[in-house]
Length: 267
Image 1: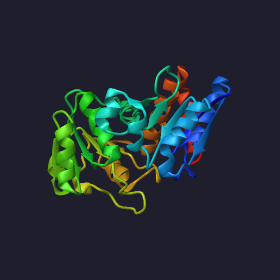
Image 2: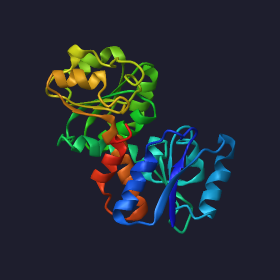
Image 3: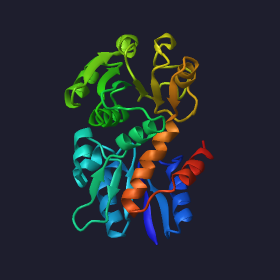
Image 4: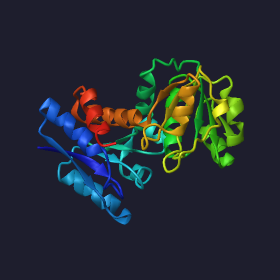
């Protein structure tokens, strides 16, 4: 039996196990997806143990996405983003590190056929999700404007992302006037029914992706839909980052609809 899993702390309420196990069952793969909660000071030992026990792959979540960089061979994208959320132990050498958050966001945007080549994109948030999404959008040909509550962090990230610019949150309405894509990469809207963007700044030419997936319909998405924008909830990004990890580990085409159904049943 092949073993895959998730390493983080905490991981109790992760939605990854049912999503991945539904895919194994659908394709008849003899595998299980388990969760691990090591103490942060034992991260290196935990990774060595997973490798020694024959674990094939691990997803990585808070607080380890940056720390694991020191213990894997990151690919170019993960190195540029500065975070790993997928580890592959299947090679001959050291485990390799990858970041599927960027790909997950791009595949979510593909659902509405948005053309990112030459598009203007506004990313709200310069944290981990904002970093991955900003690099992904820039690599896909978009011009990225990053807005963050702490403006220097937006400028710091923009200095790393090709062609990007950094801004404060007050600049978002002006940035959105001619934008094609808006991504909320913050947790705003998760705990309270609030939006990181003024409703009057939204318009019908936007495609809006909210990385928040609890609740599925955030205030940002409701207000964007009211103004005619195309909207994408955060579960699609969560799904597709898992799909990319699954396909990397197994070499099989993921049963996306089965994984999506298993995910949404638990939201």
